Length: 162
Image (cartoon, rainbow, N blue to C red; front, side, top):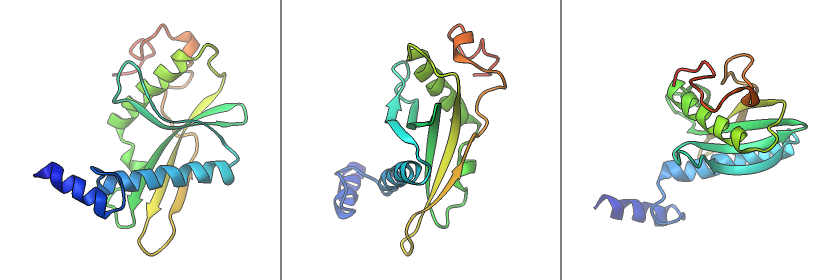
């Protein structure tokens, strides 16, 4: 019965069968964030929705380049009256998952970049207005001095509490 309701909602919302309103908002948020970063900030989009091969749950919404800096972007789409703003929705649990995903992504690169950072893009969605974008650059994710080439493969050895 629940799956039927999800499928029906997806059809009514004009999305794919099984799409929930939250998933539809997430897609709109990611598209809006990617367009904003490309057009307004001059970022180059490297990849979207990258999943870690070691843990498929760990995902990076957007990976971009800002000049020579590799930028990992977490996108949070929120309805206009959401209780928790998108920036604060990136809590400690989410940051741990993002650290694992970023570490996995960087470890897979033959030549990891010298400089990388983590940004949060909050997209406020409204039925009355076009999406509003808030961009938070260089949000603290790793301890000071972290560098993937200096790590022997695990975040625990990097001084992180996993």
